[in-house]
Length: 369
Image (cartoon, rainbow, N blue to C red):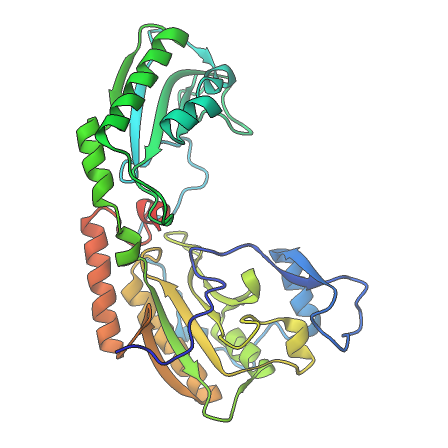
């Protein structure tokens, strides 16, 4: 059945978290009559110091055992890895093998794939094999290679988050392959040029990804709704979040931080449909924030082991219910479901995505959703 609940604000869904929050200028030592005046963007560390200045950073009790010290059974993201390569599940690659002992200036090579080339053949990503280290990395970056001994060009098969994106046809893949081969001969020499899939296979794969976001990009949410005519006080909200061990920060919302590194930065986040949709410490400290609900949200495709995360999210909501009161409702997208049905649906989505090569929380899934 369709949910009668207010729509999720989604300020801090896993797919759109920004490491900034609103903050008051240092000169605002006294809380103004209008707490939303004189606000600007601050970094996360500055925001935490700002919150500590007006509110407790420790809860009235330790309820962190409810979420527990849990990490998913998945490989964590390696931000310090030596190599960066195209992602085969989401990108069609063309490998250009240089002649033996041949190296090319990276910036000069990149200039051949500039605006004119991209306007004709589509936007692409460029990777080069560093002549010094032998590792593959982005062809041009702040600490990129000066010279390279190999080249890879990558095109997105699909960009399901863009409604107007059109997957390339077989003829377009053929044109890209021919253009790269011609450029390679002219600027590098006698090269072997090999696609990761044939143009026909690439066009077919790109088509299979069409509609993937519409079908699988789902947000699971658990709503704690205040009783009719009542609301949740800001200071009480702040305390239960601190007790659970949730971290206030990005987008001025609360988050269960993913310390293990596999999947998105947060397992779940907490927002509210009560305007403005987030939680300003200054407003809470001044007793000027009351909400009609708390919404715990989790991105299914971007979260490792989403079923387990939702189970733990439910435990956190039940703790908040014991402390704050209210009723609990479960939604997946726009549909309100019972908890067992929600878990069943999420498990099916996770299974389907894994079969398609986009297991929730893995690199391909984070790239696609």
